[in-house]
Image (cartoon, rainbow over all chains, first blue to last red):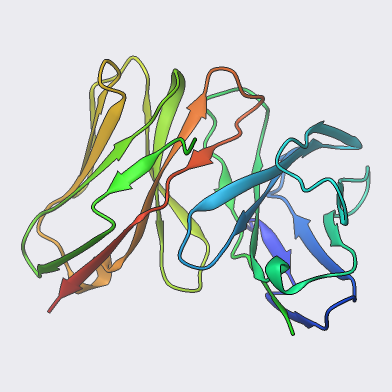
Length: 115
Length: 113
């Protein structure tokens, strides 16, 4: 049973370009979470999605960031017109349901560097 | 305000010693989880303790939870150099949706051989 798969693991973008990060949840998991980790800090919640629905996007910056989890295919976190402050590790996690008390499983992360 | 704050921020011990990390939080929770992160890697789930539990063990790990003080501790016994990592507590607050977690800033543990 493969774990949460994220790609790319490392991504370098110039300021103003777009970054697309992909996440395939664990088999049988229909709930996906995206977190951001700045250097030397803890993870900060960004968005919680189910298939075709955004459940909670209270942690997402209002501009330039968007997320989707289509019926088919991976979840995508998209950052438009990246700036240096977007440089961070972006982690995806999944759980089998939205019930509290579930262990959520994290991917290895995507490290974005904006130059 | 930050939910889930660990202390100490950094801890350095010798192999064989015990390591204790503490976590405080601010709101009512459903459960609290501890994760480990090696440098440049993802998070590995260590243990989950529910709000109605006071203590839980898993191998060399012992976690306590005091909901009246809104605090938790993680004890690693007989530490090994391979335990060197950052350790994060994460809370699943009652008022948030799904299994959304709020993380602390972490404790960087260094175990010297």
